[in-house]
Each structure stands twice: as C-alpha cells, then as structure tokens.
Length: 126
Image (cartoon, rainbow, N blue to C red; front, side, top):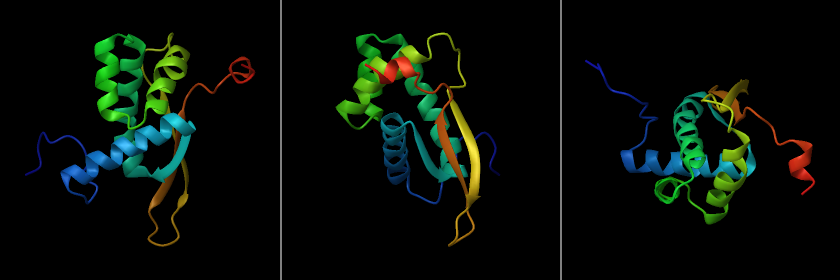
C-alpha cells in the first residue's frame, strides 16, 4: 500500500531527484519562469514556495537554510533582495502553473511555472 507517503518519485533515485529539484528552483529564481513537465512543476512548487517563505524571514538562519537548496550565490541574492520583498503582502500561493502543450516525443504534459506577481516597471528601471 502507498498510504501517507508524500511527494512523487519522478522515476529517479532520491539523490538525483533532490538535485534536480534544487536545480529547477534555482532556475526558477533566476529566470522567473521555466517550462517543465507537470509532475516536476507540482513538486517544484512546494520547494519554491518554501524558499520564498525563508526569504521573507530574512534572518541569517533563513539565508543559510535557503542556501542549502539554492545552488548559486546570484540566485540566493535575488531571492532575498528582489523576490521575497515582492511577496510581502501575500501569505502563500507564490507560483502559478499554466498548462502549455504535450511534449512531442512521449506526450508528457508540459507546463510553464512562474511567479504570480510579475516584476513591475519600477523594478526594471533601476
């Protein structure tokens, strides 16, 4: 039976799955939206929302915890300085999953996962 087991295996070993999700969350932070399969996006959503919550806390312990997941210093800086303040007034639901197409090779459902609140014009002028 498969009771009380959270998360998807995604056809990978534990180490491979964790590394892949860390890379995906780093890419999402750096690029603001990425295209991936539906199953990966649903798993990525949990991790990405946890990173925003840590960024909103902003203390040293939160930075170090986020640093274990986010792969680059550039992405960690963007998380703490740009993304977390953008979601100050929101209590969750930081990502959006949009169904896109089926992948040509195997028919896997592809989606676009992005942050809910886009960067405002004021932020891009700086």
